[in-house]
Every structure is written in structure tokens, then in C-alpha cells.
Length: 114
Length: 109
Image (cartoon, rainbow over all chains, first blue to last red; front, side, top):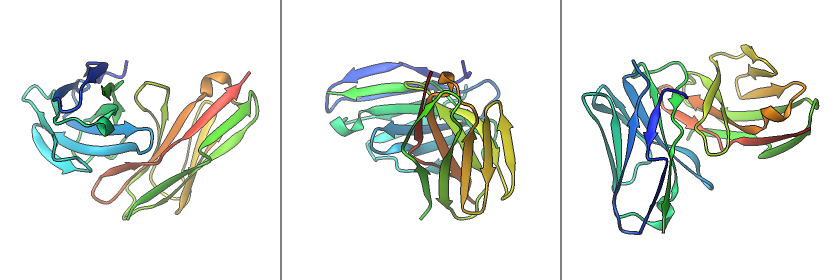
């Protein structure tokens, strides 16, 4: 157990729907990162939050949004889902904003859009 | 644009057969090169960070090295439990972390 908790583990939904993925960072970590991993793209950085504020954006679609709450858990909202959004979504956490060390990853949420 | 290229894509080894994985990179202002291990259906697990050319890190049967253009992950006398996908990532000047596509290692008993 890495200490980063992601729920749900699996999600199956239809095209056009909206889902919310949840992440609780490791105790003491203030930064949360969201990554998407698909078979043909590898791990792609989506967005980072630090202590409730957005700090960096990667290749995140406009249909996707995220936030980090005062208790530091984070949610990734995916809307108007398309078949191509099917992927593993990982959350990672670290202590600092500009982290020099490695991130701790959760076990991921597998999203299947049908 | 930053690039992280890992080779080979897949590696099949006999137990005890040592080998090396390569990660070549171009990045603006390297602030660290990372190796992660990922088991199927799991999140990446941090292995090593290397910060400067010439640096080496070891953990059990794994040894990572870094030059100015590439990093190697050497697996010495691998065991079946070393089977996994090994991911390389680079952190650039603005602290963004970019991952390579990974090398899937299968070790047969």
C-alpha cells in the first residue's frame, strides 16, 4: 500500500456521461498530480494541485477538470466522455510543490467508456 | 521539445541472464531522471532518482547509471519477480515530469 488512495478502482460508463475520480494523497503530502495512461500514449501528465491551488497543467482536455479540497483530497471530473477516454487514471502525491524527489502513485482507476 | 525514449520495448530474459535497459532523453534543464517499476494493473513504484552525469544508484539486483544523454538500468542475475514494466521519467527546469513508454521485462524461470 503506497498510502495514496484512489477510488473507485474500476468504472464502466457510457459515452456522453460524466464521472468523478477521487484521490487521497499520502499523509503529509500537499501536492497531487493526475496522470492518464493509455496503451498507445503511455503516462501523460494532466494537472497538478498544491495545497488547494492549481500549479501546473499538462495535456488536459477542456472536458476534464480537477480540484483539490481543504482536506487535500482531489477529484478529477471527466465529462462528455468519449471512447478514447478509456484509460487508467493515476493520482500521485508529493510533499512539495517543486518536488525534487520521486512521486508516490496510487493504484489507479481503470475507466472504460462503452 | 522534451523527449524520453526507452529501448527495447520488450525484453525476455532467462532467470540469471543479466541485461540492460536504455533511456535516452532530451530535456530543457534536467532536474532529475527517475526510474519506476510498474506491475500490471498497478501504479508506478519509485525506484531511483539520478541528478547528474556519472551518478549511480543500486537496489538489490538493479543498478541505474546516468550520462548527459541517456540512462541505463542494469538488471543483474534477474529473477521471475523482476518481471515488470520499467519506466524512465525526466524532470525539467520547470519541474514537469515526462515519462517514457517503458520497457516490459519478462524473466522466465
